[in-house]
Length: 396
Image (cartoon, rainbow, N blue to C red; front, side, top):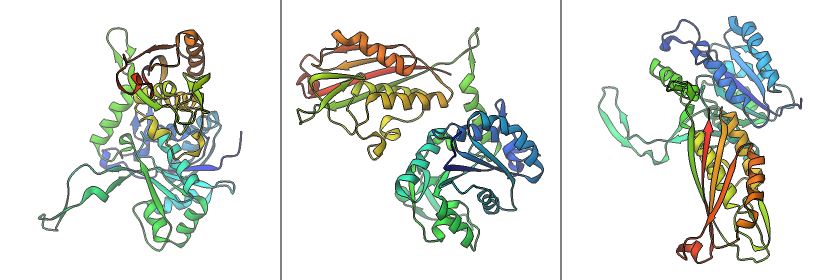
């Protein structure tokens, strides 16, 4: 097992009073496990196995350690379990205190945001590495926001264009977070505010609607419904409900005739290549889009952003392999995929079987590839580029 450089501190020491339970919130049942076990599954689904620190009530330390040691070991991750403090800030501080020297990036996560996808953990960690500053996931504020006086009267309508609803995990360079906690002189509602109080910068990346906080019974019911959907039986045969996604991608032919063409995972010698941040493989990208959509993980633009240097010039197999990992980490298996390529060239038929074999091997599932023209209509008909449309079936 390689030594982790990323740590995830999961704060799970809060009470479950508002949920109507006598036991701590993190230990309230959810699906086949608990709120905490669901949150841990999200962290362990990261691309790189993290050093996991669980901060729990003092009387739960030993039982939590014995419960999660096998799970964490199976994921090739490391585990510490510590008792929490009187406040969230004290709890996080205790979690930071046990981290080994090799950790350079720390993500702090609330167990109450149990359904946060592994993808969000990965995106936050990658952004911390790339920008060397604090990073928090956040959603746009869609409701109209009013500032209200103590007497309940509306004072003003707040401009929501610059407002965001912040979630966790919140990620930071290890040194910056240690410094902020060592110099903190007040209590803050989240780690980003504490870090900013120390004069350090914090950026925002897109959050996820599934990362909502379980606070009241209605939140728990919503979480239970989402967990149940993953394996919900249907009809007489108790078969899991499949998920279907559609994806599209478009690339223009590159102005430079020396650019190689990659399409459906294959290199096409003698053909002009497609422009793009990567190799421009419209078919592979459309497949990724369909798979991500079916799993509810966003789209290619969000997962493989053009500002990510890891994918500069990368071939379609790289995108497909990572998409397969993300889909499977979310609890799905790939049933089958179809992709249709729209364009005047290259001629697909001589290599259709080769393309299908390669794509099927990468995804571990049947992939059907077809091609058509657009009867001289549109940019594909004028020979300016290639489009692709894909459909994917996922099985929970």
